[in-house]
Image (cartoon, rainbow, N blue to C red; front, top):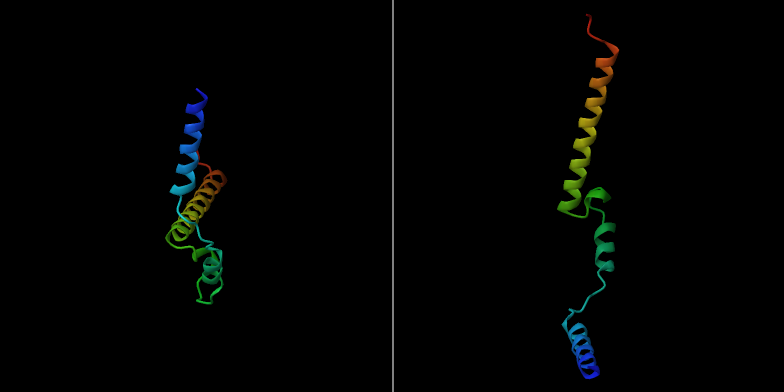
Length: 81
């Protein structure tokens, strides 16, 4: 019983220690990309994901503001019975 547990621990240790890829510190490259002067706003320098998130946020903001104005006009000018 104990031999099986020790063998399993050994296999697990070997598997986890040798299977992972070597991770590099990518912070310096990202800092360089975000700090370069290229005229692009900082909130869009992250790539396609940032652009999509920005446009979705702006679209929802415009739609929400339009709906609020519509509701205010509807409440301010009720239909005559």
